[in-house]
Image 1 (cartoon, helix red, strand yellow):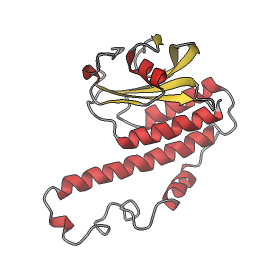
Image 2 (tube, helix red, strand yellow; image 1 turned 180 degrees about the vertical axis):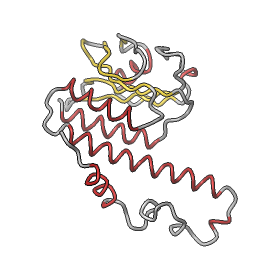
Image 3 (cartoon, rainbow, N blue to C red; image 1 turned 135 degrees about the horizontal axis):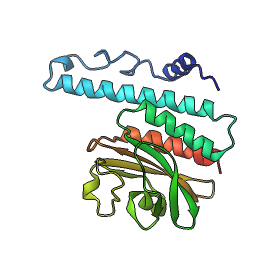
Image 4 (tube, rainbow, N blue to C red; image 1 turned 180 degrees about the horizontal axis):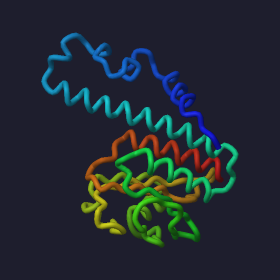
Length: 205
């Protein structure tokens, strides 16, 4: 399916508030006078601009995924498409993939991009297992500080795992994203990925 990225980008900016920093392209017009002379202003503005750029990119990717999956009914094809879009649009995603629930309390590897993943993970083990068992996002700044972490890759330093649940709140799969950078995932990552997984759970229940 062809996706018109210019139309998607226009749709994203249409939803931005006129008084937001993003609307003003990161200018200081949204701040009080004197802000530009405050200590640490450059770091703050750089971080804000990076956050704005990340949120814009997430909005574009969400729209593109929904467009690509509009007429797609196959769950495996959908997972593969989502993984491709995420892995190729966000540089801090070093391993991106789904673990599917294939039997009670058991996860098995699904579509993914990156180095080899663990093939099977029970609900009782690992961060993916915790996300499936607790039905709650697991955001881990440093995987070495989690006793239940399964080291599928020695290079992984941080991880976020989001459950995909159907209309009856049964877990269909978990979306697992690893990074080789410590403490790289933010609330923006969590919010977008939870929104995406909610969409997937509703569509493929």
